[in-house]
Image 1 (cartoon, rainbow, N blue to C red):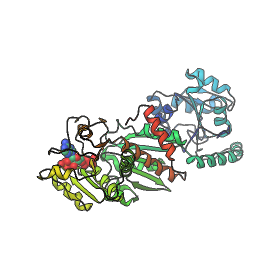
Image 2 (cartoon, rainbow, N blue to C red):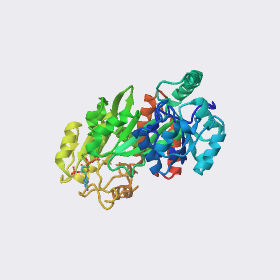
Image 3 (cartoon, rainbow, N blue to C red):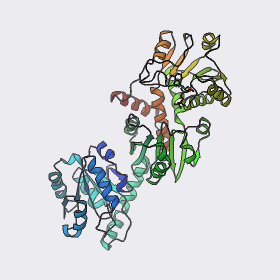
Image 4 (tube, rainbow, N blue to C red):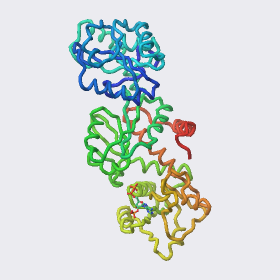
Length: 456
Ligand code: ATR
């Protein structure tokens, strides 16, 4: 995409441009066009919304200035009310305004970004001056004859840009995110950044703390802001279901959605945790589920996802073992499986009949590293595959025991990775682009290890 008129990124409006997006691109100062970018043409008073957006940027340490081709008096009200420094008569696309901006904001061009609605002034100027360029769709309003002429001249460029972006994946920066409560520890942004990096997708992925009482409102807000999709994590996975237009049959049976896709104004829910589990076990243990016996420890949402994966892959028997036996029974009923009770006299013997044993409980997870999911006496047998959905720590006590006793062990890192990959594939395909190739997936995995985000 070499065209000198093309922006580096496109957003539908300024409000979608978050401090994290800018920081992610190394931007520390934004140069703002006014007309049809921040406010409608001829309106020279900033709205509350503009002021709030500016405050959000400034609070995040991002500086801002006005870079306008207009004279200062014409935009005096605007600059007064925002308190922003201004470069008037900037002569965009000439470089001189941009050079002044470096001095005014006290930072080199590499840290600057132009945000504007016109290709021939804002974007071209930014590209010539080697600052990051963001094109926002012009706010539709009455425009002067001169601007209408420029719009007409811009048309082939807009069309070409949209075409290139459509081929590459979407005509805008696709907004994505993960919601949860808490969410601070999530590494999903780094995971999806790696997937973007290997595929050239123009997505931006952020994390959002959403309180359970605010889920419905927050969800509506994501849709309104034009998000392409979100990941959903604890505790929202079951509660998001009634808010969706359509839910995949497997996700419905699991009772948990971890991936939402918006397409043509409708929301679709999927469970890619299940896929992540299956892919991880297949890859890391070279395991073929067909005709196998599986024992699942735990009886929560994760257990349901794992069970669905096993059934879908053709496992012959899926049994459940849980501290609270009634819950194991409920899952056994739902998935045509059995229950293995820890009080069963033949527990140790029966335990060895399983080809795959999966821990979905939180026993052993930081900060409960000293815990094990089972209290009964048993040993693993050689050749059994032992999967723990926990990935912090990398080797739970339970996996250590399994390894010592000759089982093949897998931690939850691969499941985490592949649930992300599968979510990304869904968004990518909803954007009418080809799915990631096996090579790209391998590259992303290597990149994540290199960056120290994920280690297996
Ligand atoms: P998720 O939806 O992530 O699977 P969950 O619904 O809270 O989480 O389910 C956690 C499961 O782990 C439950 O089956 C729980 O057992 P109970 O049904 O008896 O509560 C199990 N679990 C959690 N901590 C455990 C522990 N220390 N030992 C054994 N099982 C445990």
